[in-house]
Image: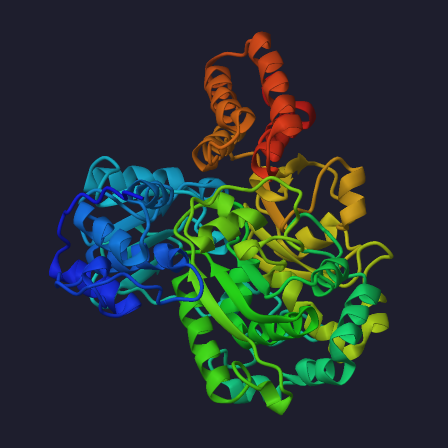
Length: 592
C-alpha cells in the first residue's frame, strides 16, 4: 500500500518529542537513518496506531502546533496513512496544524461562565489581544463552572505548563503563575459527616496513599477478593447502581454481560471526558480523591476479567491528570496496581489517555475510536461494547462517579447501599450546581431530595427564572419540588443527565444562552450523520433570526428540525441537541 508520505522533515524538537514517547526509530522504515539492510518487521503484538493521539499530543505539547514534517514523521513511525492522521489531528480543538505561539489562552464562553459575566471577560481580552486567533480563542466549557467565568492557558515547551484562571480577571490573564484553590474549594459540604462519595475530599491528602488507606482505602478491594468476581457482580446488581453519566443503565448488568463474553482480552475504559457544559463532579473526585478511582477501576477489572484499563481524561484537566499519574505510579510501587495485586494472583494496569478537546468523545463508542487512533466518531450499535468494544474486544465503560460508587457498595453491602435513595434510584448523587448562586460547587444528596432542597444549600441570587437540568443536552424547569431521581425528572419531562444544575435568574439573557447551546452543538457535532450535521446548523440559523424578530415559521422549522435530529441521529449528541431549546420555548415562553 502506498502511504504517500510528503517527505517533509521534522524539526529536532518535533523528532525528540515523538522519540521520547515511542523510543528511537529502529529502521529507516520508521523514520531512522536509511541503510542498505534496513527491513520492515513487526515489533508490536497490537497495532501501533493506538499511539497516534499520544504522539500528536507529544508534539503539540513540545512545540505548540503540529507541522507537516512532524505529522509525516509520526505517520512513518506508526505506519499510519498521512491523510488519516491529518483527519485525526484536525478533529480536536486543542491541537493545531497551523503555526501559533507557545502560549494559547482558552477563554470559556459556555453556559455557566456566560451566566457569570464571560461576555465581559471575552470583550476585555479581545481589547488587549485582538480578535480570536493564534494567541487566544473562545472555548467550550472547561469544567471549571464553580469558578466561573474561567480561562485556561496552555504553554508548550520541554516542560509544558497549564495555568487555570477562575474567576478569570482579564487584568491577570497574562500572569504566568496563578494559585489554584484546593479541590475541596469546589465542595461546599466538605468535611460534613454523612458524605459517601465526597467524604475524603478536604479531609485526606489526595497525594498520600497512606492517608487514603488510613481512611478506609482499599478495604473494598480486599472485600472484592473475598467475594470473587461473581460475588462482586452480584453485590453491584443487588445494590441497584445505575450509570451516573446520563444513560442510567444498570451497572451490574453491564459488568455481568462483559464478564460472560468468551472472547478475550476484555478491556475496561473509565470515561473521564466529562465535557457536558456545567459538569465538573468527576474533575473534583479525580483532584481530591484520586486513589478512590484507581481502587474502583481495579475492582471493576477484577469482576469483569480485564487485565488492562484505559482512563480517558479531558485534555482540559491538567491538575486531575497530574494527580492521577502520581496515584497510579504510587499504587504500582506499593503492589496495588500491576502484577499480582495484593498477592492475589490478579494483574491489572491502567493507561491514562488524554483527550484533546472533543465533546463527542464522551460518547462510549467514540472513546474507542479516539483511543485506537481514529477520529472520535460514534459507532453504530449493535454490536454493543460488551460484545465488541475497544480493539473489537468485550469492553466495560463507566464514568468516574459510577465507578467510585462501587466502593461503598462493597464496604457496607448492597442492602445498606440500596436503602439510601428510592426504589428505582438508589444511593447518593453528585450535583454540579453553577450559575447565579452564592455557593456553586459539587453537592452530594441522597436520591429523592427535591430541587428545592438542593437550591436551599446553594442559595440562589436574585429572582429565580429557571433551572437547566442536565446541561446543554438537558431541559429548563421551573418546578422546584421535582424529586431529584431518574424517574422523577423523567416524569417532569426533564433528565438528571450527568448532574448539571445550572441556575438562571432574571438578569441572564436566555435568548443568548439558547443561541450558545445551538452554537455548542453545531461546533461539537462530529458530522458523521446528516440529521445532526445539518440539523445543528439549521437550529443555530433559526435562533439567530429569532434573536432579532420572532417569526412563527422559524418556530415551526425549529420543531421539525429538532424532531428529526431526535429521531434519526446516530448518537446522543444529535438526539438531545433540541431538548433545552424546546423546553425554553414551551415552558419559559422565550420567543413569545
